[in-house]
Length: 442
Ligand code: GLC
Image 1 (cartoon, rainbow, N blue to C red):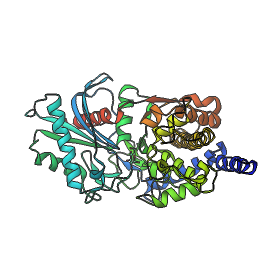
Image 2 (cartoon, rainbow, N blue to C red):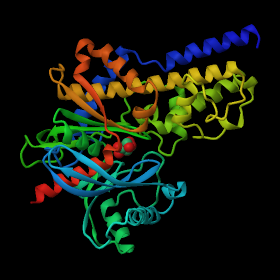
Image 3 (cartoon, rainbow, N blue to C red):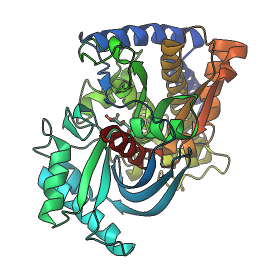
């Protein structure tokens, strides 16, 4: 490579660094917009934040019993059992995982729900459970739905690449109930329909009363928090001081500084104009952002001598996990399909991965800061944020970069915001919500 090409590369990298930078000043501005959207969403005004009430408060920690949960969220389905001891301890029982065949996520809705019911059947079979005994089953459904009751809700719109036909606008707990009936599993009662963030908050607060936020940083991203029912102008409550968990659906937040790569990814996605924050932060999109940047640099002749390797050509071929491996110390480029690339090219691809992931982590930290300061503007109290999802749990450096941002914003008050990993929180948490619902029926 000659000198001028080397200079072009360096220039482009510094431009990228600027485009993917989120300064603490930028984060502060986002927080102001975020509060504005929260307020509008709660008031029923037009807002990119849907602010959906879950109609349940946080658990007290005293709920008990055994429950099953079915968790449909991203790339896998999980079916699991959990027992609650009534003393803040939830013990996970047997669990089965099933990969969702890609065609089911975009095919006929009935086929998807039949697959869910078949997965529950396989769970019973694998763990030799008694299929005649009645069970309460919590449905952890990690998509935006308008709750009608604790165990009923209408899917507003698919996210995360799902597009199964005939499901949007439908009551999804009923779709599951029908599918279970079609398989003869009449012993299962769908006892709660729970967004994964709500499950994560329930799991966190069952054990720790200071937990007041549930966050998912995985295939998608979203959060929930406990709100005074009186602030939900569009859903009149029994008593204004009652608490209800609110699912923010923050993935759809859109008052954000987007760059050309963000705009192009959005336009080419299954849901243009929607889930703009999710498309900058979550695991489903990070690899795709990286891939698009690499392709653009290649088209300018600044990488791979201007000829893109086949591995860069397929949309969504790069996952966040591949990116993590490439930008890690071991520099493993096999997942990106770039093992044979020149060292200098790999170094730049690694740098691009780091820029994209760093912005994602700082945006995630910003969104958390917005919700915590909505609850407690001066950060007078301690807050525990329960977080589930592979991006948080497995992406090297992600939590640390979120913490750095909080440190920049709040200095020595930043440690008042504690992160606690809630591994598999959504499934166990959904079971806890079923217990809260059961207790309120008694
Ligand atoms: C998407 C869904 C949301 C879910 C999140 C995390 O943003 O719309 O409901 O909580 O992914 O799985």
